[in-house]
Image 1: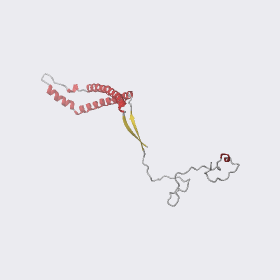
Image 2 (image 1 turned 45 degrees about the vertical axis):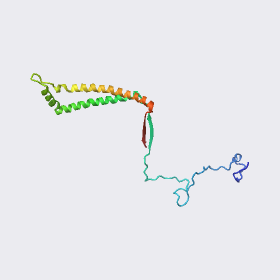
Image 3 (image 1 turned 120 degrees about the vertical axis):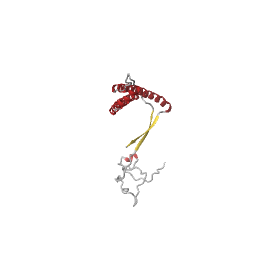
Image 4 (image 1 turned 90 degrees about the vertical axis):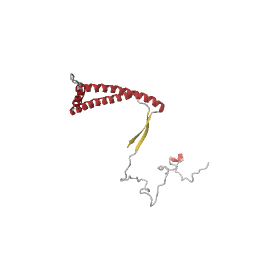
Length: 186
């Protein structure tokens, strides 16, 4: 076997590295992939190995946006039922409040009395006064009717949303579900 390393300097017999066959102990310098440019066109600090590059103060950094593609594989029917129940109750309360406000505005404008007078004249005879719209569309009756409709809507919306979650889970098993792309600004 021949030594292809070239001539080696003589080692002292006291050195602990002599037994391992290595040269004198020096700090390790890894090989550089790119040489450091030297000369008049080189960037500042290129010759100084300890120099660090400083960021430009006037430069604006554009915010990076991370994106992730996700797939909604399953919708939990129990959580869909709870959320749809709460949302339908909120919608029912809004319906009741809106009907009360609408009734008060129409009563303040005198719509019930003018339309009621016209209807009672058209449906009345000499013996009776005809149909009384103001007693038929009184506020308690309107509130009862609106509350019944709101309760029916709460039950139907909750049942339909839960049924929709079951149907989505069945169809997502076949086609893989809905794919979403979510983005995060840093």
